[in-house]
Image (cartoon, rainbow, N blue to C red):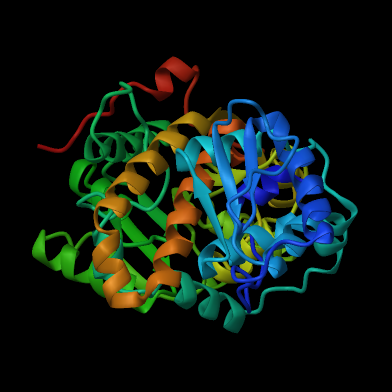
Length: 420
């Protein structure tokens, strides 16, 4: 069983509760199979009668408490699909420190995808323009107030950059935006395209601190409404245009192309679409771009529950897939790669802490299952980055016939001159 997949978003369907029925011999046998899988992580398994399953470690980091027979069967036969749904529905609990237990389970994962995940990758259907808008709506249009409860004040929903481990989330998110500006050597005369701009945090940062012109694309109506209001409030609407459209309709040309957290939503079957966008949008001489995305070491779809409940249609690519299937067909050369995996784990730790501080209000407004699903998503994602099951890449690129945006990496990180 792929227990790293298990910790990223795991599902089962707890349709009935068997707490009143004493576990049978078959139940205990199934529980022993689950216990064998999780014991190396220092995690025990308890059934609904409160008994610890034989074979559990003498001292456990925490326990998986199974509340019904259906959940137990799901964990024994397909944990990748079963954990998240069972936890969300209340058929499974984690006793002990939540994120450390998930991280310990994540480290048990085999490095190669299972036959099931290979099959899912092969049969994945293309994402149409309608699919893309629906997927974005299901995740990002949950209400700006919901996200404001645990994101930073500028509503960045991508990995921050912690120059110092004890930085605040607000400082680290501003540091990320500034680092992207420096990597691209943005200048006041540049026209920047921001594909999948979220709540407009980066577009507004670049306009405010560099003075460049930004055209930002998004298909989330709630995010665009928030971003446009902020641009007007901050007096930046003359520099930033927020466009309600899909990235596939970007034409260009632009001096710099930025995508922070959109590539995961493109889908494996649509990489050629993104390649065509880059080929026509990035100026052939002097143009450059940056892709900031969640990735993997080996090709593998995201967990089934995560795609179904949290990120419909999402796919985290490998570096090889991005370079061979996006950048190379677009005529782009890689100038720099940086892995911010641990920065992403720390970002998620901040988000998770803030979310849990307000989870009571979330539960009251949206229900217990929604609240538990997002607790699991945030803590499980933190565990996946901390364990190395997920990566966070920043890739700087430029057209093959053009010079890279800087001579050395040290030059890249020199703070550019700012407008007065």
